[in-house]
Length: 144
Image 1 (cartoon, rainbow, N blue to C red):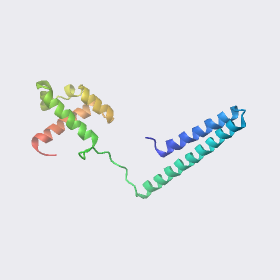
Image 2: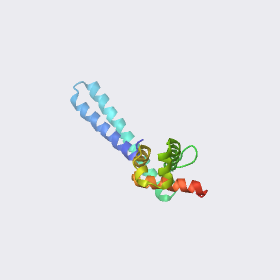
Image 3: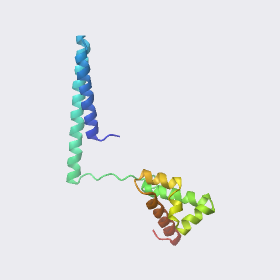
Image 4: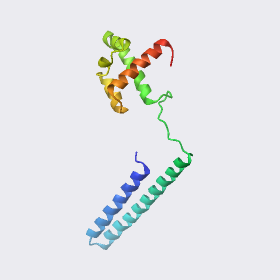
């Protein structure tokens, strides 16, 4: 989904394209149609730009907080991914289980679910592996 500034720029480009096309037509009706489309796209661009300015003003005044992404269970998607990976490692077999229990960051950070989670949330593989180990230990100890 585009933010309002990107949307305004897109409508602006469309308007310019239609003006360029209008110059190429020799038929008056076709030219008028392309020019009217360009005018409509200009209005849509102004509307999106006004929307962007209004949102920016609300953020600056503190009336709008940035929405936090949460899963159905109320967890952040990264935490949900960690729980999924941990459950996956515990059910895969003795090597996966022992890697988590022993805290073997090198072994854990090479696994595909860890690599995918790291890419999705712009983290290093080792950081995700350490978070997995920390989550396992906190669940074992009964502390958050």
